[in-house]
Image (cartoon, rainbow, N blue to C red; front, top):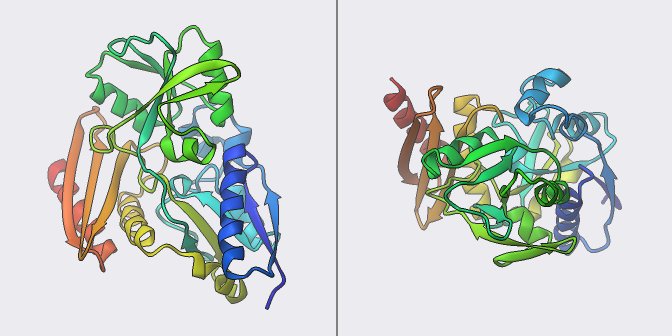
Length: 310
């Protein structure tokens, strides 16, 4: 049995926290294993001068996730044994050389609105780098709120919110806030108090796979699979299989404004999604199917979407 496993991750505070969670989960099953966290700088981290949806084209990474390509190169080269990702950053279609060996138990999936004191909820200017969130803001506030582009990790975005006289708030994943210790309905950052409003997952739909942490390995690496597979959370795995299959059917990357999530209730899975047409019109779909067949549930949801689009 291997004595050490090398875990590749981005270098942000949140990414490192998620890598530490993965290490703890793996070591819970194999206590004698030594783990090394290897920080990898990605195109998404390097290119903060342009909107997130334009990074793939600028970096020449095609349909790879902008926070994924460099880590997968290290994985392919054997520089790391396992990659840890926020699953929402990964494209629905994976390279044939890799596989998702496990997903950790999912955190809360919804978005959170971080607001300055005294912000007028009817006339908000919100910072986000997500085309999904831009469209959700327009729909949720019926056009009375506007967005401006803002990039960076959680701390950078909080700092930009505090320093910018233009911004009233920013939108972040509640999962990331929780993992960094920012729980509840308020936080204090660098001496400034901010409020947190959780956004309903149906009225303000999250990114597909939001809140899930993925452990990716080389498909031919059976030793690493044996170490990583035991940490897989079954219910999370079933839900994200449906969500990723829907993404794959759409051939969607971060430039496609789509949102949604799957939930398991016994033998049945419920899949909900919203897709924004080029003219900004939202198309909402709901589809139910057997929990044991998440890809079939996704296919049924995709067929419903196509019927609306056609």
